[in-house]
Image 1 (cartoon, rainbow, N blue to C red):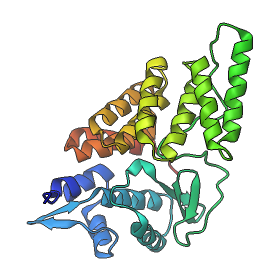
Image 2 (image 1 turned 120 degrees about the horizontal axis):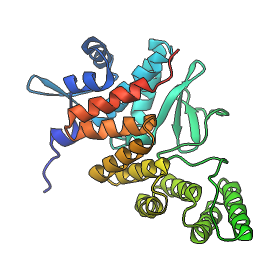
Image 3 (image 1 turned 135 degrees about the vertical axis):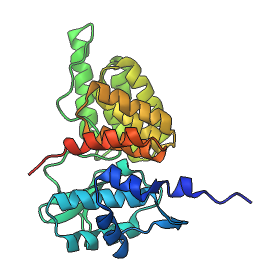
Length: 285
């Protein structure tokens, strides 16, 4: 019979660690516990929080900063808590205010946290655990102009097929990469499709190839970190996030993801450093 998982693995965060990471007061956390928003366990006199608790607390903090009323935040988050698996990585969900509503994004779907109704979002680019690149593709360096144009045409065709024929889009992205191994956009979009269908092993291998050919592309290092995190390869994921941040110090998502992983591994100093950077990068007003 397998041993039961330890609290260090299922509930790795203390109250002190949570308040330091998220910038919440002890009173605020206690109130959220009282209302049933999060459910830590007690080990002796110490409260221990799960990864899901931290995701929910961070979400409450961000929505409150967006002036969503406390009562609505609590109602929405209770709905979300029931649908959020314990092992969902923080980077897989995006929860934010859209007007006066609380919106949850998973993959390219967005829905109202209160009603479960799908919502249209005309302002946010599709995003899931990884980021796909948009139309502003980096130029492809090819020895012949005709070949460069053919590659770009294949890339644009692949983009147009993503929503209606993902396998065909994947095949075209692979042809683009074969013809132009330094096409960062094709790697990003192909990996995005793999992660959407939870093929994280394939995505991690693809991004390993991508960063060899495009070592100065921060988004590829970030996406590789997300794929590695989904596979439980935490130390490698942290290295990828750190490489991303050396190239792009203002990438807030990389700071956030790195902070959570450092906190899980017990490196409080690094976790606080990245959470502080993440908070500094959030829009104010």
